[in-house]
Length: 136
Length: 136
Length: 136
Length: 136
Image (cartoon, rainbow over all chains, first blue to last red; front, side, top):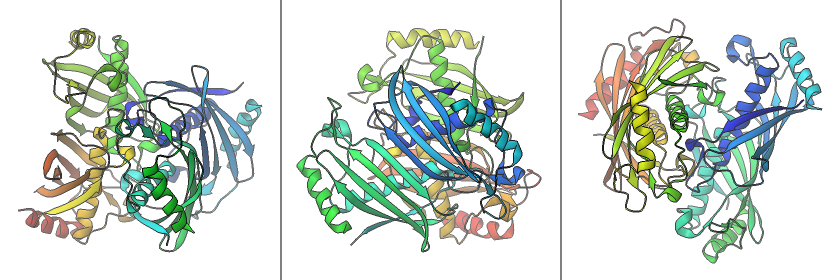
C-alpha cells in the first residue's frame, strides 16, 4: 500500500505570482520523505551522530497544474530503485484529486568523514527494502 | 559571451549536514536568472501589473560536488531553447573552478487572467533572443 | 482553552550549526497562526480576492533552548491584544515539555488597493474576538 | 563610517501578498551581518571546525513601509552593544532613501561541545570591537 503524506501549502511557500514557489514543492517532497521513513521505523537523525548522511545528487520535478496558498497536497512517495549506495524516490502530488506535480530524487549514502559513497547500513537497508516492496 | 553571476552561499542556505540544502541551489539559479535578464535590459516585475507571468513547468539539477557555507558560486546562465510559448534555461555552477552543479529550468509564458500559455510579448522576446545568441 | 499546534522541525529548517535556523521558527509561528484561525472558522485566502491583507508590522522572538532536526514543537497561540485595525499574537513553544521559544507578532489589517490600515471586516473580527476570549 | 550592504529582494522572498515575506527580511539581515564581519576581516566558518558558534537568542524587527520584488535594499549594520559573551547588532533598511525596516539581533557566543556561553575568542573580539567603534 502506497504511502501518502498530506501537506498544507503555507503562505511562506507562495510568491508574488500568487502560486506556490517552485522550490517550496521540493521542500514538501522532503517532509513526505521524512515521514515516509518514519512510517517504516527509520528516523533520520543528526548526520555527525550517525557517521553517514544522505545528500541528493539529482532532483527533477514537473509542475502540471496550479497550486495555491492553503491547498492540501496529497504526496505519494514511491521507492523507485534501490542500488548499492544510492536509491531513487519518486513523488506524485495531487490537490483534491487533480494532478499538480511529479518528481524524482536520487539520494546517495555517504560516509560523513570521507565524503565518499558507501553501502547502506543495515538499519537503513531494511526499511528501504520494505518501502520498495510496499511501493509496488 | 556567457553571462556568469557570482552568488554567495548564505548560512540560511545550509542544513545540518554542513552543506548547502539542495533547494537553496535552485534559489541561486533564480537570482542568476533575474540578473541575467536585467543584463539584457529586461526586468521581471509584478505579474499582475504585466498581465503575464513565467511559471516553471520543469526543473532538474545534478549536484556534482560539495558546496559549503560562504562558498562563492560562479553560475553560468545559458538560453538553451526558445520556443513559441516556453524557453529553457541551463545553469552551470563552479566554486573556485571546481564543478559543483548543473541544472535546467523550463519556463512558460502564461496570461495571468486566463492561466493559459501565450506567445512571448515583444518586450521579452527581444532580450530572450539576444540572450540565446550570446549563449552560443 | 488554548490552541496548540504541533509542528515538526524539518531538515530544511536546520543550518550548519545543527540547530533550527532562527528564521525557521518564525515560519512555524505562521503555520500555527494559519491553523489557529482555521480552528476558529476563518481561512486566510488570496489577498487580492478578499480586498484586504494582513502584513506584519512587528515581530520579536526569544530563543530559550536548543531546537534540533525532527523535534516536535508544541506551539501555543494566544491573541494578546485586539485593536481597531491591528492585533497582537503571542506564541509559546515547547519541545517535550522543555521551553524553547516565545514570540510576538503585530499584524495590521490593510486595504489591498489603498495600502492603508482599515478596521477589521466582520468576518474576521468575530473569530478574532472568539480567539481572544479563548486565550484567557 | 557605517557599513551598508546592498541586498536585492528576490522572487522567492515575496509571497502572495505581492510584498516581501517578513521572514525574508531577516534573511537579508543575515547576509548583511556576514558581509559586515567579512569587511572587518572575520569570516564565519563551519562551527564544528571552530569549536564555537553564534546562536541568536533574540530577534526583533519593525516593518515601516512596503518592500516589493526587485527592490534594492540598503542595510546599515550597527554594533549596538558588546558584552562579555553576547553582542547586539542593529539593522536599518532603506529602499531608494525611503525607510522600510529596522531590527535588532542578540547573538551569544557558545562553546559547541558544552552548548554553554563563553567569552568571545580573541580572533572575534578584535573585529567586533572595531565594528563597534566604526558604528559610532
